[in-house]
Length: 147
Image (cartoon, rainbow, N blue to C red; front, side, top):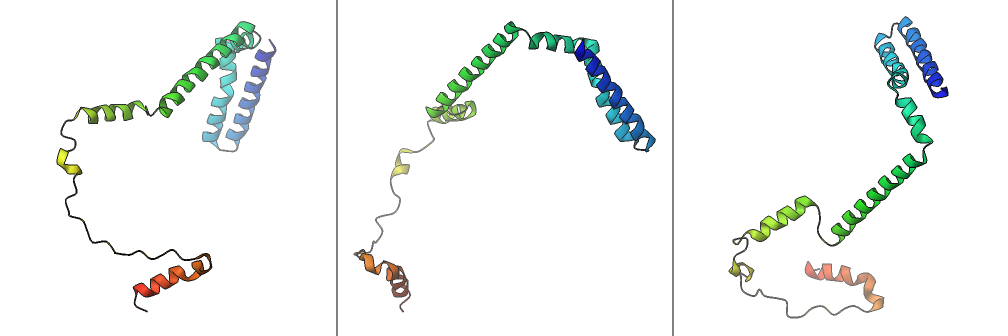
């Protein structure tokens, strides 16, 4: 009963604001305000407000919300575990299954290097001592450029 009265008052106030807005020649805003202000009275007339009031004070309804919350937590937990195992999303699993089904994905000889062994420098520069750390990089660059 109180909720219906409050919704009616809110709708009446909103329609009053819409009239004042229309008087100021802002018709688009006035129509929008009127539309928003008619929503509470429409909810009262359809019975949604009464249903919400009955639901808010019903222990069975709150237990139902708790069960829905538990189901959501369980669902999200299984999704997280599935992703950690490397299952990925459904799309990723489908792509992986398609690629595994291909027999011509990689030729057996493709893993062998196509070029021979390249030449490697015979010696590597010795690591500098702790005191020479500041200038060892600079010295290497200068030697590289022949300075």
